[in-house]
Amino acid sequence: MTKILVLTLILAFAVAAPAMAQKSAYCNSGAVLAQMPELKQADNDLQGFQTQLIKKSEQMGNEWKANLAEFQRKVEAGLIPPKDQEAGSAALQTQMKDIQKYEEEVRNKITVKREELYKPILEKVNKAVRDVAKELGYTLVFDTSTNALLYGDESLDLTERVKMKLGIK
Image (cartoon, rainbow, N blue to C red; front, side):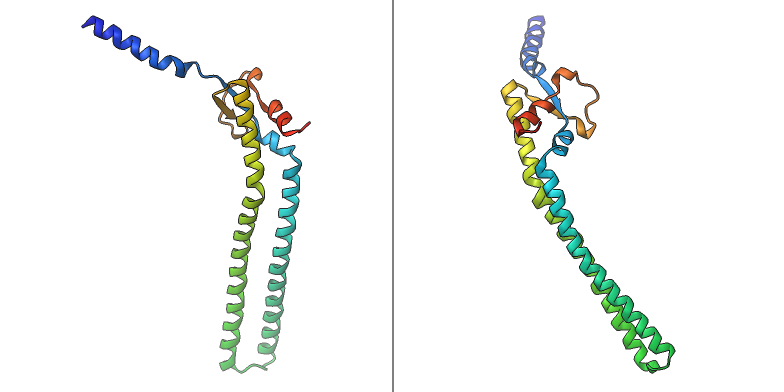
């Protein structure tokens, strides 16, 4: 019985030992991203795209305000009979719903564009981290930009190596 217990403990230690011997390091991907020229270009592209879409939304809003003011002016002046006021009000509500629908489409388009612009950049950084980790024999790399790492010896920081891999000075 004792031999089985000893053999079980030895076997458990033999299986667990390689897992305990894994080399770990960390990298601040946020710091790497912040220095990438591609990110600055993507930010500019997204800003331009967003500005263009928002400009149209503002034009639609200004047109609605003008229509509302004109409608109210005509109602107050008695130029629109009471029976036609309801139709005018409904038209303004429909116009407002169209504006709200467009604004929702704008948010969705911006989200899609952001993904389209940033995804290749994030993949490039992740590949560089993987390559550096493999070159140096690390099996685990934590990202300090997510604040998930509570402590890490500075000698395990791969941030500068990843920057070098990406050509960032």
